[in-house]
Amino acid sequence: MTDPTTASRPESSTGVPAAPVLAAFRAATGFMPEDEGLALYAAALDAAGRTGLPVLEIGTYCGRSAILLADAARRAGTVALTVDHHRGSEEQQPGWEYHDPTLVDPEVGLMDTLPRFRRTLHAAGLEEHVVALVGRSPQIAAVWQGRLALVFVDGGHTDEHATGDYEGWVPHLAEDGLLVVHDVFPDPADGGQAPYRVYLRALAEGFEEVSVTGSLRVLRRAATAR
Image (cartoon, rainbow, N blue to C red):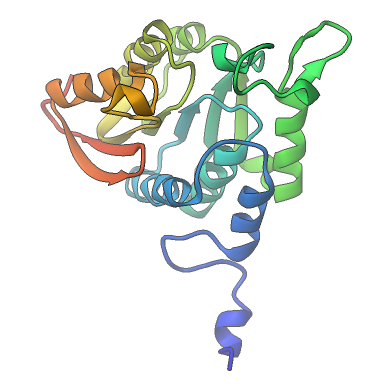
């Protein structure tokens, strides 16, 4: 029998999203596996809850992971920031493995994931808890002035892009904040190596590993980390 006091609660009181948020995540377009998404959610809830600062992701795509970050930020009383130029990363262009022709703007002939992202947030009821930063990650990072509780690196997977995201945003991470890197594959047969190299660099520069879930790595910024 269902506990009526639990059934009436509008959200989970634990470190996991409530059922409607999880359902919205599952329905959204994107590539984040559920177990990795839940690890990201727990990290965002922890970091934002401890610091009261915003959480940020690089690589919005259609908003699948932004749903989780937004809900974690909402619960912590802050906001989620998500950075993307919305023209698609290199592997999402025509002729590549992850290309989705339904995301091409027929008027300009280029990828445009921004409309799908906005519909995703609207369907999840989380629009007011997200700030979409539309543009190139290094350009936005260069003018950003605030501190961040969490930085989630999930943008372009070339060395240029992954390194640029790390170098651009890690300086804004609060002391004892969390760095999350997605698509970390130590074996080249499993995927590209740029995120793995960023992960290794973070460890070399003083970050401490907190958790490993699939290809998702959560690291804590130690006081001595640059």
